[in-house]
Image 1 (cartoon, rainbow over the protein chains, first blue to last red):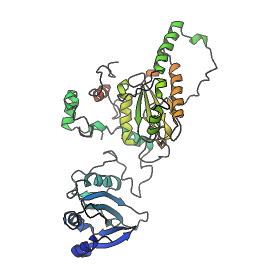
Image 2 (spheres, rainbow over the protein chains, first blue to last red):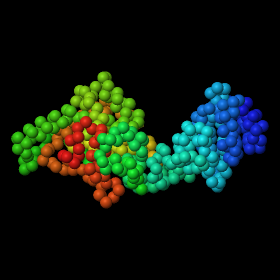
Image 3 (cartoon, rainbow over the protein chains, first blue to last red):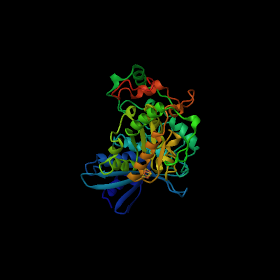
Image 4 (cartoon, protein in one colour):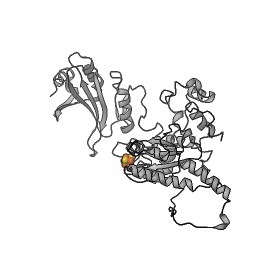
Length: 201
Length: 208
Ligand code: SF4
């Protein structure tokens, strides 16, 4: 077992729900209220130094009675350790957990992806919007077990909505990689980009 | 477009009342011959089929034999859009804009099962065939099609081009969505989109 678990238990007591080893990796289930403190401690403490957040994701089981798990993969490059943190969200409870963006800036897109696919709201995230699907996507959260494989709308409706998404009106100039060409753009296009006009709702 | 049965190359049907004059047919032939042998592809490679498309363009299969070695990464200068790979719904407006930026005459090849029908990806995220977004001339089956398959599709497209008649204006008609719907993109916006990137400002859609 990863030696960090002992120190986590000493420090956070009952908030560390359980810890187990599976396939040589340590999984620690913590209660959602202390998550941010646990992550900050693991990142900052000189004896831990988990300086790399490699993934934020979630697991929903087919059995409706089982809780949904939000998962953080932490890696300590100096000590060569790997630790998996989990927060359990009971069925029916709101899907809200703390964002670790204030500790790891790399959590930005990882949390957006988990939000996009599962609808988990990361409290404290600066810019929580869809990342893989387009922003106006209305059908829900595709990796949830209640989501039908083909989506909720008919194929024609899906196509109409996708075609109406109007990408150049939604993204910033950096995202469209035309920031360098800004001076050469036609005047009215420049105007629309500067005003940040959003169409295609 | 729809699927029509392929005409038999060796069977000639004659309808004297619909014949064109000698000059017209020769001119058609000349124009079609030059078009068919210099189809510049706009590669729209989104997935594994694109790897096979690269193999087709590389030296062993050598697209240059068909006058297609010049990949046109500006849609303004492309003649044939080759969609190699699956198109997710998020890319649907992109491929549509690329198609709208291409100037006439233009053709489209749908390469592989995914581009033609969605293939095995019958899911919430994937367009079930790009012919729901743009008109397609040739469908190449396979997952992925071998380079020979794609070349066969290209040769079919060349045959199709050779049979075009200038007189037939319906070939160049583009169906636009209802201007009141939010699917409609005015030609001026299409021009504006590609203007900073193209190397010729006169190749805009509204100037033709
Ligand atoms: S048809 Fe097959 S090879 Fe081509 S994009 Fe689809 S899965 Fe990939």
